[in-house]
Length: 224
Image (cartoon, rainbow, N blue to C red; front, side, top):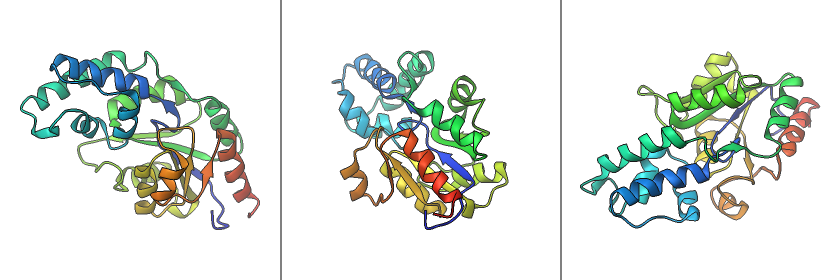
């Protein structure tokens, strides 16, 4: 954290706060089966996520966006995911306690996600309304992560300077997003990427469990 006092934490959503992998994999494979295409393993889907659902499907469908039925299959995926996105999705163990502990210590909390804003809002209303102040998803006027737009939008809504904020995520996309936004990054190790992969992509600060995030941010309060 470079000794800076941090007042605000901006969180990624999938793989950081919520375990959404099984629902994403189920909807991906529903669309692939609909198209008569080979299904993907859960581990394959794990490596496909991070840049939004369109890129997830581009990686899952043979030939990607150039496949002649891609738009049809992407539409099938979206409809299925909207209807089934909460069948297996849940908070990671310790995440609720982490968010409440940070709020009690006076930290400002935000979420930024490459999910569509409507989906982010629904998940926010279900899981985070009591602890998180701002939730920013994909919007037509805003570039997706790793562009910094969503982070800057969240900070603007909080009226917080970037120099007081830290970014918390689980993937290489999150490391790149934090770098683009000029924020230090805490990479969590319970999500969709492992430590070695994250190190290869520039991660330097790690949290093995949600309690580590509280510890790291509390240290900044003490001038650590």
